[in-house]
Image (cartoon, rainbow, N blue to C red; front, top):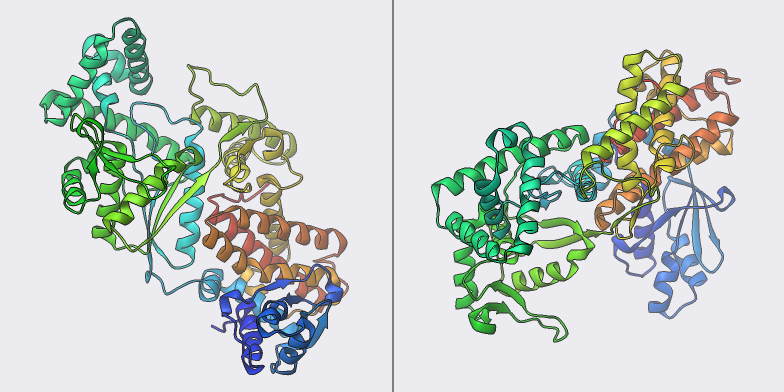
Length: 576
């Protein structure tokens, strides 16, 4: 397979920079699509980057670099503005790129921006709901942002071990066990386990406000759990079992899978070693009343508590055990946690403690995300004060069904139902993933289920339209890969240029752990394709060359749209 794309353009320019006597890291040599076709196909600001170091004018540096460009890849090179180098690429370049896209997009992407399959490993912690509670809508963000990051890294050749670090340990389970023993109805719990368990937990806290001794009873039940009490262990195992069954129903609807589900309880017998090592090495020091703490480097930060004065461990203790386990078991290059921004201090303390312990040489990434905000104030739960994720998914499919019923009049009832499932779930995912995760995520029904603008239905419709054109042309995507491109219209070139930027979007999304770069790219590609489609006939083009050019571009767009949406965890319907 021939390696082309922006990687080769960068390599040609990099070689010219070196021949000119300058030095720049290949990763720092940026090549971008020009905003105006009059200024070339691609542009680089490398001359301006080098000028300051060399003590020269950017235009002079650009002139030196241009003189040393030796490649049949470019049909024209110009210096523009203060020192931009603009290049026009030969048409054969685009033909080969689109042909490769159609033949095997997985190999195409992996060779350009990926690594040798399995040569690097990432372990991830995403979703992590608490057992004995229904999954709330707030779990949606970690689940689908994390899943998109994981899918992107796997596409680029990484081995990713996905871990669902569920909350299944701690004093709260002593309280729940006390509530089950005191007020629980076995038949009612078996009939509706999650709602009944939540109700019992809420009742414990209501009763504890009237009788403070209940808090001690709850702690006592957890102590029995820690000490291995058979009855309490069996109760916790049951709670975890029924909770995982409910979680799996949600994950199946979201098409999210995990390699591991190692909850907090998994690390129960792994914390003693961490505490011993930390104490021995002076990382864990005495705090108030015999508690163990980790002192911060920044005097403005509070110390991190790893063991309470009564000897009890904490969430942080289990987190450190998790890091040690991941390191021993997988020796990863990257450890990833996709967690709410509210946990920023916790992760700062966690990484600080882990570094002082020397637990791992892996890059530790806290991919935080903002809070979810609801534009539709009427959106609220039907039961209690938890907005159930299941209810949100149901509503999405109901709204999508009404929309599909109205628009897709030629589809059967079964096809409309399937379309509403794909469109409903896909719209929720895309609404989240198209936004920058570090900002608050706005949940907007009208926007997410619109066929106009940056939405899943718009992208799905673009992909199905492209697929329909290929089918009407009586060819397959692989057949289209045999065509050559013969540009006569700027709109054709714009689509081809946008296609070339796909691997760069995947790379940027991976580097920054931000799936919105993929979403934004797909939206831009869809806009360019639809502009071309609405302006230029494809199947009824005025010549065979023009028809083949547009079919090859259409096939390439269809492959990229489906591939990119797949990384975001979004299906594309057969019909719309």
